[in-house]
Amino acid sequence: MTTPPPVIQAVPKQLHIAGTWQNAAAPRTMPVDNPATGTTLCEVADAGPEDGRAALNAAQAAQKAWAATAPRTRSEILRRAHEIILDRTEDLALLMTLEMGKPLAEARGEVTYAAEFFRWFAEEAVRIDGGYATSPDGRNRHLVLRQPVGPCLLITPWNFPLAMGTRKIGPAVAAGCTMILKPAPQTPLSSLALTGILTEAGLPPGVLNTVTTSDAGGLVEPLLRGGGIRKLSFTGSTQVGRILLAQCADTVVRTSLELGGNAPFIVFDDADIGAAVDGAMVAKMRNMGEACTAANRIYVHSSVAGEFASRLTARMSALTVGDGTAPGTDVGPLIDAAGRAKVDALVRDAVDRGAKILTGGELPAGDGNFYPPTVLTEVPRDAALTGTEIFGPVAALFTFDDEEDVVQAANDTEWGLVSYVFTRDLDRALRVGERLETGMVGLNTGLVSNPAAPFGGVKQSGLGREGGRVGIEEFLEYKYLAVPTGS
Ligand code: ADP
Image (cartoon, rainbow, N blue to C red; front, side, top):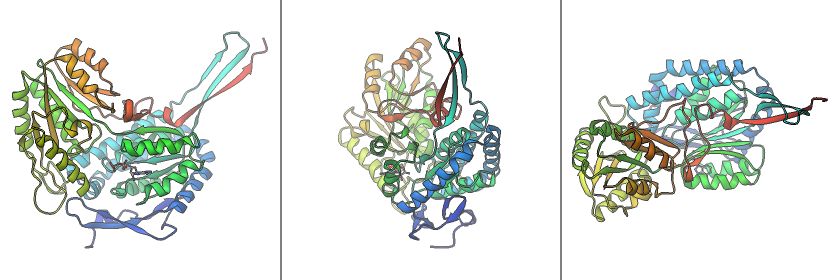
């Protein structure tokens, strides 16, 4: 391991429990690798179940006093953290690029997006309201108040290492919940840096406890089954989400799950094709396609399919693939060798079944987990990628002739996170938007993520919403006091 760059050196590498940075109880460490080079950037603490318990103890011990803090105090901590994040945009972006691979420009965009969750929830912290009403028979007063659910377990994925943290920490802080944060083992550094920033911003000891581990199951299962955790907020695969939901059943833990997607992207014959291509580039290529919102199946009306395919292919083949830290890189490496092998296998399968490659489709030689921007056309509807998240820079084009048929095809999946519709016909946009079985619909846009909007899915894409007005609700309980009126 060569000397790490200064941004890596500056990040704490230990667990953060009860306000102190500490080694794992069994003092193990785990490597953090750079997916562009395959080299190890540094080692961080590798927590075991005993560290998970210590983190829970700390979160429980801090809960009562934290819940009693003034909303304005919690709001201002988030506001300060928002400002510190923005002040450190360059360092945080570089850190993210080094551990995750996305190009620096995208990493900078994520830093802003991540910070926005803190600003939004700083604004929400002081707007937690209740109710005061007379019962219909006049005999009782109903007083309704909101209280934090209690200690939360926040589990985040590697694809948006900073924003998935702030999207969960923001509402938990605003609501007055204490937390254990368990980031993905591939990208712990952004979460460790974020933990340091929140401490600087004044978050009291024990409110946020960050544990990095290579054995997520070993640490998480006893926490969820053991009682003490009152809320799980998870972003990751549907497969792991199902396991966690079952574990939550033991002690009836409230859950928010943001799971996989299989987004349909539909281009009607009356669409503005330039806008649709722009939208597809965002919906497909944001984060190299490693996003649950990524356009997985692109359905184009047969009368405009040729034009759309050639314009998209021109854009995709003009992208520069390389190390995300290099100037001019548009597309960084995929997260790891397994992720790349999966993308390659899905492309091979589609081609074996008759799909045509318009650009890309070949594994490059050399180091790093690179995969070229790829456009596949004439993809048959039985290709494996129609039922699997590609999670890579591969645009799979299908054709359709009929609105009814494309809506049915779009809905023919267990997932329901997001869909995209391009048409100039307002009636059609609303009609199709209402019929698509997804929690979010982009109408003539390839980007739906926004801290002020309720993000989340239906079907097996998850439970609950993050962001928007409802984001904080997930971390609050209702309590109702019945008080006789005396009449
Ligand atoms: P991906 O396949 O994209 O890495 P995962 O669902 O495996 O998605 O990972 C998302 C998050 O869930 C990561 O923080 C990971 O460590 C965690 N995770 C994976 N398996 C488990 C498990 N059995 N219990 C708890 N957390 C898990």
